[in-house]
Amino acid sequence: MKKIIFVVCLLISSTNILSQVRIDSLSYVLTPFYYTGLDEISVKTSESILRMELEKLGIKNLISEQRTEAVIGNEICNNTDCAVAVAEKLNADRVIFCKLNPLGEKIIVQYYLIDVKSKVNLLIEQTTATSIEDLENVMKRIAKSISSVRTFSESAEVGRITETETLESLRRSSKYNFGITFGYLFPQTGYDNELDKTFTFNTHFDYELPDYSIGLMFGLRKGFAANIYGHYLFSKTDFCPYLGGSFGFHWVTHKAEILFSNEKKSSDGFELGFATD
Image 1 (tube, rainbow, N blue to C red):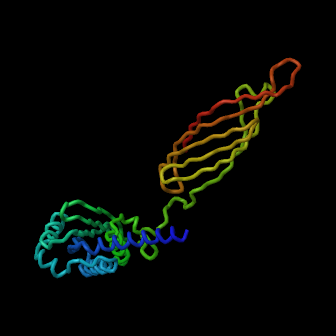
Image 2 (cartoon, one colour):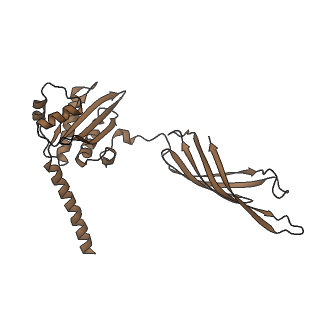
């Protein structure tokens, strides 16, 4: 058992070492951020944070800001084609291009990681900073995303959560729901021509997904019922119209219509339902 654990640990360590060697063997270019409607000092500070975080995460061959600006000159590099052309002149393997644009009170951050030789986009991501101050956390997350070549959402970890991600959804946070319903059923011909109604009691267990809810219903009446159901949710708030249906099995006891006999019989059938609100 100890040998197995040792081999597994050795394989994990080897994978990490190879991954680190792979990162260290590549050269990167970070082109100056392209931005509109933001102050230059804040943008330059954000760029500096990203550069430092990339180096801290193992990207050692990050071409200096001075060499990059010397190649760009007075040109405004506002697209990925320009970024790739700059990287080719610097003989870099990968290039990072980032755009910042205000949208109301928010700042939309878009970034690309491009393989220079194949011109393939390794990452095309977009995120939101709720304020200038939030750009610090956003840059740390972008660095983590780039260094691991993972999406922005996959790079979440303790200490690197943006303000947008801390905001709670308007929909209730609870995903599992339980409820009960009760009332009376009025069959068209009654029950065995004696009772015109019967008391019913139902329990509901359901689970809510982002756009759907699915559930199970058990009911007691003059017999029992079991249904599975699903709803499509039209809103992400607590006030949520829905449209759905159900399918289930109902079983009802009744007296046999045989002369001089009180023998109880059963009757059953399937049910299709439709629900909206």
